[in-house]
Length: 75
Image (cartoon, rainbow, N blue to C red; front, side, top):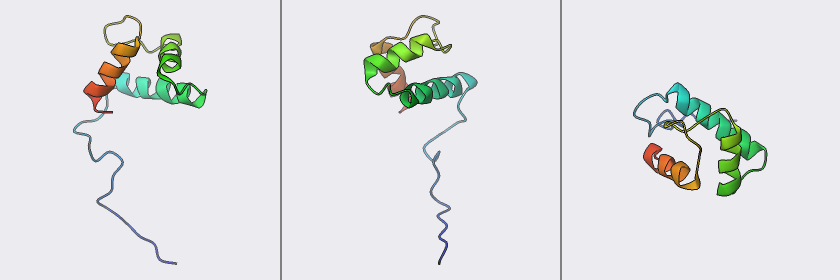
């Protein structure tokens, strides 16, 4: 069986920098929320508010703040 290598495919090819520690913590909290079945935005935001990861301004997550951040990060 042939083995194929695609060196030009990278899961991070659109990244222009390494993620910050805060971004990695946020990604982990989002993955955990999804893993717990929180797939809709209101449930995801509630799960983030229950996590240790706060928005950059230190407040609480809202649907608006979360979607604005995802637009900013290019997600």
